[in-house]
Amino acid sequence: MPVYTDYELPDALVSYCDKSNVALTIAAADRDDVPLVYVNQAFLNLTGYSAEEVLGQNCRFLQAGAATEEERSAMREFIDDEDISAGRFRVTNSRANGETFQNFVFMTRLREANGDTRLFLGSQFDLTSAAERQNVKVDIAAHDESLLRNADDLAAMSRGFGLAMIGSAKVLSESLSTMATIIYREG
Image (cartoon, rainbow, N blue to C red; front, side):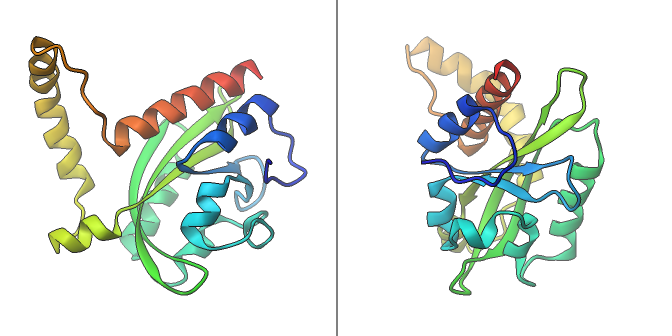
């Protein structure tokens, strides 16, 4: 069952997001303060909030004072810069019960045919356990740089053994974003 406000969203996009086991949100870029207009059940499960508590709010409510200025400014820069199509952010968030978690957020612009951003698709991954096990902060930039350096070699090796590479959260998110973009434009 879709969980969204009166904001008009393509049925195919909502259906696609409803079926996902990844925590997904859609925010309206064309409304003041970029409010959430859709959240799926996986997002509600991740955060512990109800749809009524989150719809119509900017996603920053999840920060509840836990996010650093660096985390907040990276997300603001993405939202404000139309030239950036997608972004990845690690941000400290709080669940409804007050428990903090390390949220790895992927955001993608869903654009109108004329190129204007109408929506932001967000996918969230709880990295708290991974960060605690490593006892270090997740360094997204270093991870991406390393991934880019080694991706071609790994892909060549896996093809050589007839294996399909199993993707990371980044690949999954980009796939979700690509599918949502296609569905949005066709819907």
